[in-house]
Structure formats: C-alpha cells, structure tokens
Length: 486
Image (tube, rainbow, N blue to C red; front, top):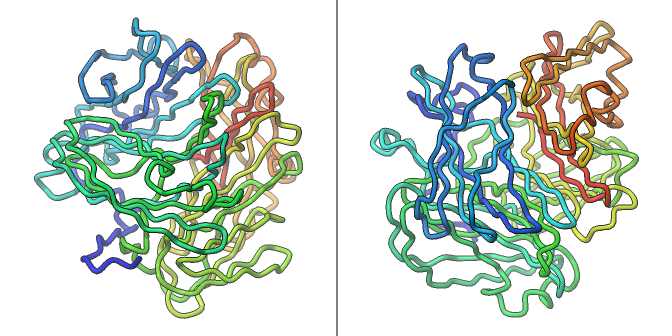
C-alpha cells in the first residue's frame, strides 16, 4: 500500500527543538460524550507558570457532532493547581467535541495543550492525552499544517460483542466531500483495501467511522484474532490525528488511544544505522501483556529483541504480536538506516479483571536523536472510586546507567488546593516503581478523601534523563487504562 503521491516529511527534530513558530495559543480537541452511564472529564494542570513563567486563560468550546457551538466559557483554575472539567449541559444524552484552548500573552512554544480526557463508562475506565487540535489561521497561512490524513494504529478487536472505531474532528474550514480509503490486515497478514464516499464536513464537525460498516464480514475476516487498520482522508484546518479504539456493542465498555501516522505513506525521516528502543510497563500483576507492531510502518526489514534474547522479524504489511517478557524491546533495521518513528500499541489486563477490553496505549520508540528528559508529568486518580498505579523504569542502553546517587522527586498537585506534597526517593528506593506502586501508598494522607478526585504528578530527575513513567487508572471491577508521561 505504498503511496505514489509525494509523502509528507515529518522531521522529528522540529518536535525536539519546539520549532512550531509563534504559539500564543495552545489547544486540543476531545471527543465528548455524556449519558446516564457515561461521563467525560478533561483533566489538566496549570503547568504554564511552572514551565514557562506565563499565565494563560483557558477557554472551553462545546460543539455537537455537526460542529454547532453549544457552549463557550472560560474555565477558571480556582483555588487549586489541577482542573477536572466537564461542561454542564441540560441534554441527558449528548456526544460531540470539546475544544480546550489556553491563550497567553507570550509565546508558549508548543501549540499542543497537555491535557487528558477520562472516559468513565458503566463497566470501564479509559483515558487519552490530547490527540488533535484546530490550527490557528496564522499556522495555515505559514503552511505549518498536516491536513492529508494518513493514520494507523487502530487494533481491531471486532467480534459479535465488540466493535472498533475511528473518531475525528474537522478543522476551522469546511471540508469538501471526499473518498476515504481503509486498509485492514488480519492475523494471517492478509490485507483488504476498501474505498467509500464521505459527505462534506462542516467546520468543527465530529465524525465516527466503524470499519465493520465498510469491510464485508469483518468479524469473520479477523477470525477471533486481532487485526490492524489504517485510513486515508482529508481535513480542512485541523490536525489529522484521530481517536481510535474499541467498545462493546452494548456500550458498557469503551477503550481508546490515539492513532499514529501511517509511516508507509508519510516519511518519518531516518536516524542512521543504530538501534532503537521501545519502552513500556511490564508488570507481574498484569496479564495478556502484548505489543502489537503496526503493519503500516516505514519500508524495511527489522529485528526486535527482548531482554531474554527472543528475536522477532518484522516488516511492513506483516503483523507481529509479541507476548512480553521484559519492559524494553530493541529494534534494528537489517537493510538500511533506522526510521525516526516505528509505532506500536501495547495492551494488557489487570489480573482478575472482569471486563472484555483491556488497557491500550500508543507508543513510539527512542533513539540517539531523542534528548534526555528530566521532567515527567502524568495523571493520577486520588479518590475512593478510582486508583492509580505509578510505574517508572529506565532505558539504560540508550541513556547509560542510572547511578547509585540518582534521586527523583515526586510532587503531587491537586484540585481545590495550592498545597503540594513532595516525596523523594534515592538509589535502590527507585527500583520499587518498576513493579508499580499505588499513588495512595505514596501519598496516603492526601488520597481517598473524596469519591472522585484526579490530580497530577510531576517527577523531577536532575541526575538522569532516561526515566520513562506511566500511570494507570483502575476501577473496582479491574477494568483499567494506562497512559505514558508527557
């Protein structure tokens, strides 16, 4: 499915250098749904004064599926560092989009707002960080846009009880009617391509695409196994990243992650003849821990190796599902330079979980061009209804040994208070986080005070820049979601 059209070159150096032009506005769009058994909460922290010494005003715009504006309001930070926001609307059953904009009087450098959506369904919990946004007019004028959608990363789990989906949001201009292409690859590495007509999109319109509505007998094609899906489409004035996921047909469970570029059709750039490293949490109290290599990847032949020396061959057009035994995978290209991006999705269940859908998260990999990171931000459930587990591990192959004198500082930020709580861990103490530590065990006096309470954690590691961190959000029935740090 290699494209004959000119590929978009996605230079990762611009991301690392924060080369996004003047960004007085930092924003993100989320799918928003509300009914008697489903709620959407946007969680974020007032990090701009801490990171940039800049104050911002946050504006929320709620729109229906057709893009019609229903509500716009300023969301105050109130008396705390953290905000958990859900607009108050009279409709009992609603779905659409929620745009969150942070407006500043100075250059924020990064136009993507660090926010998360938490989706609480009847029998599941799921979260995803900001995946798309509407471009500012000056970005469109300067050509700093990607509006030709070539997205992948959806792991298909379709059965009689489960259906997969893409959800997208058009941008600030109308999008003409178009032809959309879907590619679906099953566990036998057979790929189906289908095209279908898609009507005009209004400004800000939200759309859903269920692959099973366009692939004849998708359930039989998958044969009870997982598959992968990629999509080609256009937006006008909006970034092309999509919300991707699976839900039960009875809508009691809903699990999401964000899509990633189809690097078989976009150009990821290359970093040279070197190794890359996948980072993900591998825990004893999780089961069915699998990494799904996306068949819609950059051309080449690759060898993946875990810490036990198990080897897996991988190339575009072929799916690889790896049952994990370690927390870092090495990847080497066998026939050329390593691309700057190769995408995966990792999934797992809590042991004993009473749910059909496990937690999933999209993840790229690390290489020598990725600079060390000393500040890590992440979400954390603190209340009685939901728990969070903090996982921290390191990629020593890339960033060197941690060192006996290494120290991390974990700061807890909360809603409705400006007080912060700080805990420090040194040397061997840090190793406990490899297995996961519940946040209510780290900060027992600050947790379980309210039924619903979601805060943020900030990890500072001045001595070592190779830590990777993840947090879960877990429900009583064992259904859970997982997300990586910012």
